[in-house]
Amino acid sequence: MIDSLDVSYGDMWGSYEGPAHPAPIPSALAARRHAAGMSYAVLLSSRERPLAMAERWPRGRWRLYLFDDASRRARMIDFEPLGTDKLLGVRNTRLTTSDEQGHEAGSESGEGRSPVRVPHCHAPAFGDWHVFAPFLAQQGHEPVATVVLNDVSVEEGAGPLRPTGIERLFVPGPRDTPDGPAVVEPADAGMLRITSGRLAVTDPGYVSDPRTVAVPPGEYPVTLSLLRTARSVEVAAARVTFLDTPPHAWEMTLRPDEDPGLIGEGEFYGVGVDTGTVAFMDATREVDDEMLDDEVFDPLSFVDRPSVELPGTGTEPNLIAFTAGWGDGSYPVWTGRTEDGQAACVVVDFRLCPTDQETDTPGGTGPSPA
Image 1 (tube, one colour):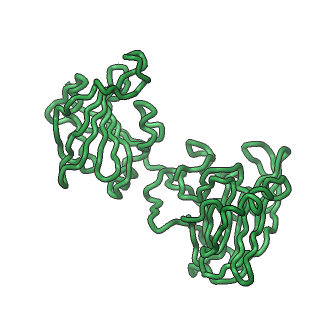
Image 2 (spheres, helix red, strand yellow):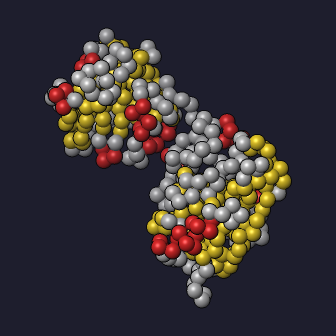
Image 3 (tube, rainbow, N blue to C red):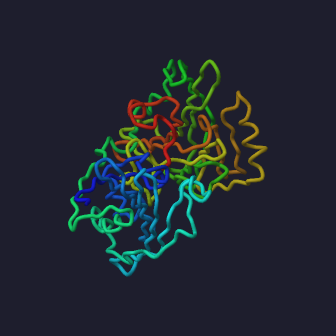
């Protein structure tokens, strides 16, 4: 009989990789995601043996995986919301392994579908994982009437990526990097014209959903931080400066629907890059996709050409594009503000010079999925 369950949490999209969380998160973060209607996963174990994994899906749906004695996922039960406080089991699927019926490991067997023994249950409030205990019996794990839940999730860490060492990205001189010694060389990339009062930071090939910052109309200098190693020269960071006043504080540049409280330790919301390129431009600037190869991507393919300007016509805003560090991924965008809240500058950090937090955080210095 199962009289207690150990409870831990993780990112939902990693739970398919096995019976453990490849990306564990603290219970407080999972609770915030639950309240925000976001996805996450709950692992229920007994004596260090995984018994079930519950995934919280969008729109109130849940998926429950049950594990066999070899800690393999043996059964998958899908639930849909029934009213406001119940879940209806709509599919009960046996998952086969590679040595059964010629199916791939973890694949669905159409012949393995059967009715859900417990047709419905209460939709769990966060932490109310008792609702899934009766389903453990399908794998031979009979729970007692009241199962004790033990929170064994990881502790709350330092939180999202912090803006440390941003100013130093543009200070010339030697640096130690994961690839060996290097030298930082600041470089002028031209003057950016803002006419609408909104700066946009985006991949020039995907300009429909940029990160924006309110700034006064005007022309502002763009500076690149070039990181020179024995093998190459890469853009380590890019900055557009609006005021001569040094920033009093730095903040992550967020979209209106983004909440740093919903991301894990060392993670961030950043500019997504799919063309190996990032651009500073006015938020109203339009980009002709058919001209990007000739006017942006091809010129930036030369080793000695880290940036390129697309001029505006007349008084229209221009665009300054630059190569994105090692290439595609997601990179943090920081807004430096004065004591009275004005935007002094905006910086894109391509994370070639890791901070202490990035060095100490599991996962290293790679781009965040956020």
